[in-house]
Image (tube, one colour):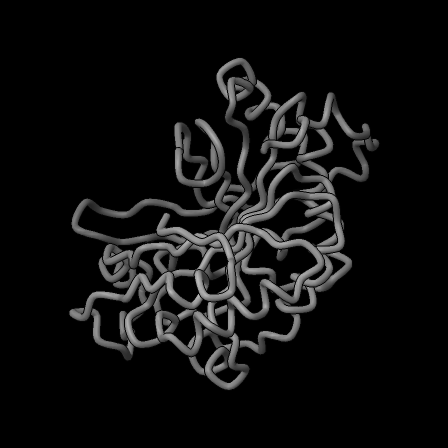
Length: 267
């Protein structure tokens, strides 16, 4: 059930305190980034280096140029919180009808102060945070506490495997998941299904076990594998080397969740 939308601007900081952020895409009419029709704000910069990342243009926090067969295009535009909120508020009549605004990335927590300042200026809009959960607890609480819904990625429960496949430790993620479970903000856990990596029975069972240990039990969504990633890497000057077999279909195994009475479905 969708929480009541937070009404009106949260606060009105002075011009001198308005943060600036870098966005690599403002995608309108999205339907997979939260309830209803939404505008999704993709923020640049991510501390993770997931082997399956399908937004390589979001990895660097700096504006860059992508080069492809169609020529060059700049990726990454700076906005003040006021400028971005003004753009989003202009769409309010459409977005208020069961939809809203989603902050994704990259990783929004890398620009926590900016995201929080934008949310403070949104007018009667449902706000969703799509996050890996990797960041300081202070930044996480700052942003998640202003949202109506958090889409929280859980990739791998084994610490060593998490470091191997994402480049970072999963302890900050698990700490922020525990913090989220103690907050009033609704949340959904999402698991990207990567063949032979995240879709193993052992990993899915470990995720289900962590879910039942939380003080409140969220729904789990298993995300289908995105095969469109590779083509973007060359345009970003990067090499696509997934180190797993893309030709194998990932296993959408709901049994570990069913055995522990965790609500789960393929998204």
